[in-house]
Length: 184
Picture 1 (cartoon, rainbow, N blue to C red):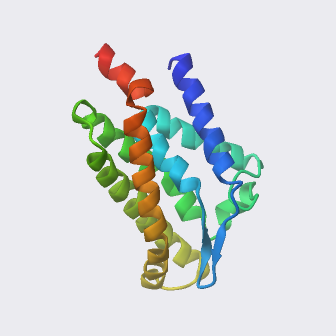
Picture 2: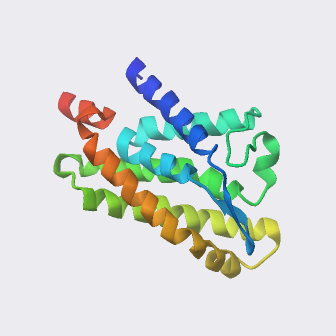
């Protein structure tokens, strides 16, 4: 791994942490708040690619596990791995890898609409399909109730998917993916 990729991974782990400083929006009917951190997660996949993006999110998770209060609401430590948000949190590396993999596949013909679709399917739908059932199991509710409750995230997550796609396409020239494509 090149130094530049390590720097990007660290910067995006920091970006996700900074996005966690924006106060969460609690929902009364589901124990998982609306946060801006998924914007950083989605952007890591479509801007950094599968390898560096996944590394950035894993680094972020390790820092949270070590106790740094980087999750929305100032949460951190091992206790977050037993809470209702753990499914969402642990789905992030999977989502970033999938987003990065598919973004890399379409890179030579990159268009904003393509990245929006990739971000929606793997940054919105996949995270909810993993996070909601885990939340339901932890809170002793039905998986169906968890999935229905997770629909509250769809409008905001769709906006995040669009914003991330626009940023990634606009910054295509400085993306680590661009460098990989040029050297191939």
